[in-house]
Length: 458
Ligand code: IFM
Image (cartoon, rainbow, N blue to C red; front, side, top):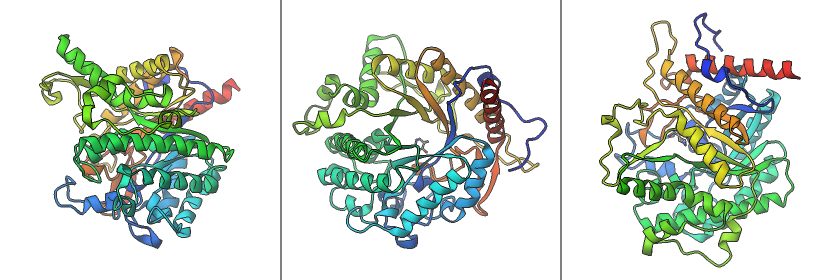
């Protein structure tokens, strides 16, 4: 990795905070967004491979066929992670790479790829954090109903057991799903993500199946007595009413129910929130007897992906772009206080044993400077203030285990294609050249300083 420029920015706000000695500093990616090699060595197609083929669904008409070519360049990428000095790396396994049709035969070449990743990380002193489902369902399962079908729950449990048996004593943690809300809502209600369906009742049923599959997979993996800790990752954003009007406040409560309580209540209380059930009416999911007990099984950790808060107005009139608020390139507000508020609230309202920020970061326009560097001051400031927000949550007693930057490198940002850049490492897609941005150097320096403090404390 390039050496730190003399003027390298530090993370001054975060550096002033206290983090526990065992706090995990990490970077994160997901399989579909970086691997490419969409049909290499026996891999089957995923719903995202198929979805990207539809005209007009991806902003730049791109797909994940090559992405960051990580499948070929994994060694160089693992070296890059090592050079960042982080403790851990969060990645996902591509289900159709290891079990191409989601059923039947496993693909040894695909499994061997992740052996290399896991062993390569361990050899470099980096702890592997594995996610099972970061949205790339085998297309063959979609063809027979996908997450709308209860049979997919059984296929997912088989997948979880297979992966857990293979890697579960080498990885530090296994998360069942990444952001089930996205799969259900964006994939099945608004249809802007794969598999591109638009059916409210189906989306509700999908969310229920994802939760049941989570609970069953956790129980099945628990029975294997693995070293890995087990959990799930949710995308949560605190909802704030845009005005003090009763209508806006009521709408904010309902929206909070749809995003946060819809997942947190079944996971930790064993029930769906009644206001959201009422709102769904006929579209409410079919719940079989015993399902809620299956979902509410003890987990070791909860991962939170946080990017922004959401401002809610009853008539939909709030427009972030006209608000004058500071926005990222996704038009998401930069609001670190929302992260502290969210973490503290989760800790107070639910018996969560341990929390991780499993994703946090920002997309910004990142021109490469004349000096060949990317001076991403906005992202660096974003990381600084959000890490400090985690420090604030710790100070208020939240059992935080770690913080993971989204993302290690620029990658395929789903419906936004390659237009939006979240990486702390710049990727030139024409050459696949990786260039650490200033934010990467600042994060590295911050993490190294944390490690030095840790060693000094003994
Ligand atoms: O890129 C995504 C990631 O796959 C899931 N969480 C949000 C990120 C930014 O949109």
